[in-house]
Amino acid sequence: MEIGAPVGRHSYREQFVFFYRQEEMSVIDRYQYEEENKDVLAREPFIVQFRRRSARLVKKLVLIPVHTKPKDAEHELRALHNVVQDARRRWGTNSIMILGDFNADGRYLSSTKRTNIRMSSRPYFWLIDEDADTTTSDLNDHTYDRIVVFGKRMNDAVVPGSAKPFDFKRAYRLNYDTTRSVSDHYPVEVELRDN
Image (cartoon, rainbow, N blue to C red; front, side, top):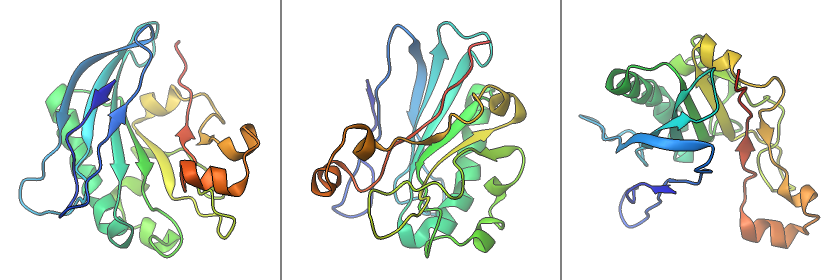
């Protein structure tokens, strides 16, 4: 397990945590991203570089977790390009995955506004379908949570059709109240090929 420092503004804080199987992956390095000039990101990412033990394709992988502030989603998503560039410079890799609660749908980010974000075009690939519901609410079907990979090689390593929300409500036959006590979002998942 790798745990980042508490991040957030004022008294509200969150921490990014990575759980991983040590027999499958090991941590190469990690760092807490810090913005240089402007305070655009409400929660600066805790970035981790992993080594995939059995993989031949994409042996090293950088994960950048995201949780944007809903009303600032557009500005924060624009700033994420700088985070990706920072990780690329630091570790000399293009094998990067950005994942988490982007708040990238509904009133927080229209499809028109999304096209103005640098990460909405190549070399970035958005893996979660636009019509996927990543919320546990019965009142909306927004796709707030996303997985985005950087570069063709990283996209080629993705098992086609594997990127999706994990509907734990259905999988574990939970009622609405129990589901909401766990989270108001479904986790998103993706599989990577080894070869």
